[in-house]
Amino acid sequence: MISFLVSVVVTGAQLACAQALWKHGVEEHSFALNRQFLLTSRFLSFAASPFVWGGAILYVIATGFYMSLLARHPYAVVQGSVIALVLIFSFLLAHFVFHEPATFSRLAGLALLMGGVVLISR
Image 1 (cartoon, one colour):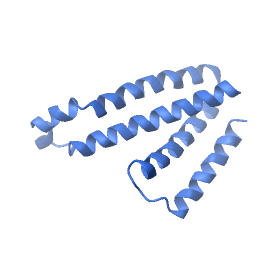
Image 2 (cartoon, rainbow, N blue to C red):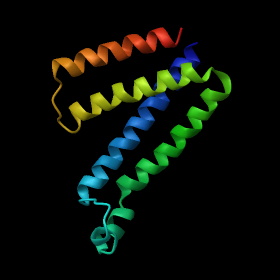
Image 3 (spheres, helix red, strand yellow):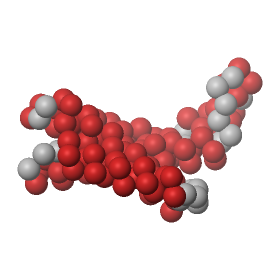
Image 4 (cartoon, helix red, strand yellow):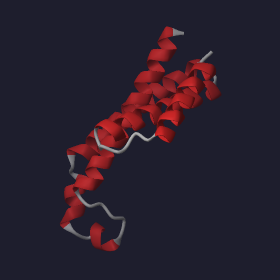
């Protein structure tokens, strides 16, 4: 049980951090999925960004952890736990790294997610 929880927490943290790195990368290079962006040097700069590559590498590592969890535990338990923890870690990163507001409704949702993780992992 402890190894399951540690693996789920590590996987959720890796996925949330990878997505935060991507957010920083797309903001840093004013990413836009259009012809003008794709045909300019901004795209090459974006494609070479350490934030984009770091996020991709971290995502691959997290996928390895995720597959390991799937091999040993029921899909619904793994999926529910990992997704909930990704949302929790994303909330924390959004607030502390990207300075997004921690409203009452977001905090209430976070509490519900944490309760759901406890119930799902039993």
